[in-house]
Image 1 (cartoon, one colour):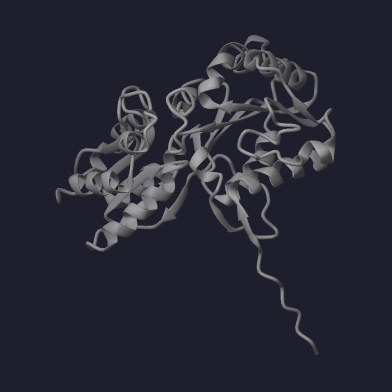
Image 2 (cartoon, rainbow, N blue to C red; image 1 turned 120 degrees about the vertical axis):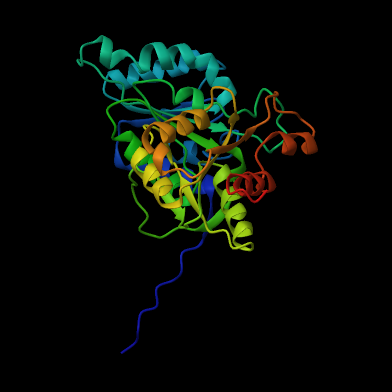
Length: 334
């Protein structure tokens, strides 16, 4: 008898994983369409939607004019009327032009209508620095959106999450924002052939450890894992938590880790003042203060607009050596 050998899954990039997620959604549900700037003939600013308009046509892959407020509002209206739109905003910085639509309409309609209407809308956008796109294209503002009730905020850092979060998000009856870090689009790996929807409400322990909890998300996950590997050379066993969902936060996973390790450092590409890291620090203090053996640390971006020169850009955002230093400081080994 000849044994059947199953071929190993091929290498795939993060951008291709997102593209496959969009393609899958378009095949699954005739109500799904995507709208944004340059998403059609051009194939997207980051080449995520390349080829999709040729495959699905301009009605379902819609090029929009340069009006984030306008096409986000159109997506909200379509969602309220029964469609399942995916709105692509080119960068998180440009999303501020649609903030009125997101905050004052999408996030509030269910509340203000007495639960008569919802907005089942998904908004995707690129976030983060590292590609020399300067101050108007490089900030990490997902923590701002995590402040808003009425929406969910996702930050997929792995190929599985990039592929699987979108379909789960499209099933949600309320708005879901997905932040894709620009430094991840070229990341490659192998994705299981049966990869499917993922739970968007749970954090993931990407590396188990006993000495300190390193809590992060998105593009900073891989730097944090590198930092954990570096710490291991000095017999420091770091646990790495990938938040995955920034609103609502998975407090249970965070607190269980802190209870085990008794020390924590948060790595957040946002600015320190008023940041998501500050919120997580406070939750740890509120819920797990007596489990701590030392102050909670954090590594954030410098409080400056993201610079253009590469050496200054690198200096402005969290890097592996800063994470290692923060972990050692929290352990009293600085």
